[in-house]
Image (cartoon, rainbow over all chains, first blue to last red; front, side):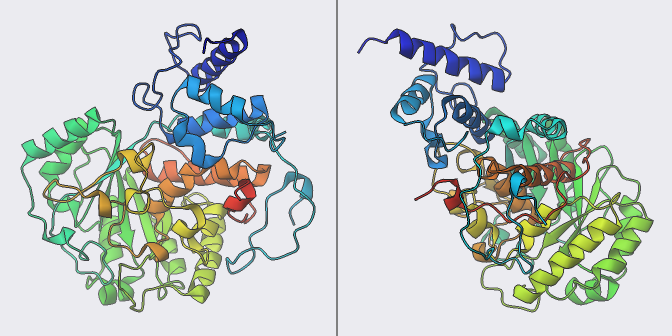
Length: 92
Length: 377
């Protein structure tokens, strides 16, 4: 299925959050490969991923279950995960 | 008393589960709200710089110059591994470890000070780490790792449990004024009241100290094993020592809660070491290895204190990783989050050379967050 403009916007925003939180250099949301494996290719570990998840929870108003953290391996998978979750109001 | 608007469940005396009625639904805090207090934000930014640390542990030799009751090294099969004392092999191992992303090494078992040439090689390849030693022999100052010196009580107890006389004296002589040194006082069921006199001696010598809780090796049921009463007394003494010696004790109220709780670390937080964590997706389950002296490792038994009874594990090394990794469970309210920050600040000060502990942000004894509190079914 082709990527909608909304999907693309969300992917860019998630990439922007990851770049900001992990203080990544030489990369922009536009050049961030949404299918890059954050663990294997970017070297993200559990603490970094937890931090990103907490910021995403704030931004999107969804609760991200701790058991789901390991499945959030790419920006695209994160976007799909967030879209599949109703805003719970658990955080804010 | 806790103020209701800032949350945090007080930890009841004795370390059991907090009692009380369910009460109204607690306020849901955003992570950004928890970071809105400048001191909290500053501490968060300070500790998160060290999220890059990826540890593994290494048994350096099968030999020891002490014979201590309740030593976990001489339990299980690891003690029988063929010793590899070849510096070149260790250099290669350290290089391979770096390649797979390890950034921090814990050199232990049985007594690493007996193989100084291996310590030197490890330090040359891997600049961050810690050596767990009994402190009988001074480690060359050129090896710039943190050094943890194990203390199990006063002289009488050391003679009895470790068969070593004048041990504290010798440890202080070796490591007084050494910026690498952190003395680790292990509370057993039998040495709780001795902590005051040992702390006095260590503070007089201007030594820094942190606290450990004896965690029984598998199958151990001897006199050192804690019970509910000894854990409660240990907590009290930890608090008292932390208040009495703020310049010398590296600890926080939440450290005391986490390590003297009636439930062990695994029960409270879910241990993330491979031995108790089947997942290889991310974190310690993915990267942690515990190398034996023959440079082999076995995922099935890999943790920072192998052959410890997991149900009884309250070990300071285990907590440093296990509590820290549970960041997301501690973002429930300001006091709980501050407690977690204090814990991580303590862990970094204890383990990382050059890291200075700040003042504790939370003076309250806050109960560990329940997993269910985070929305688990």
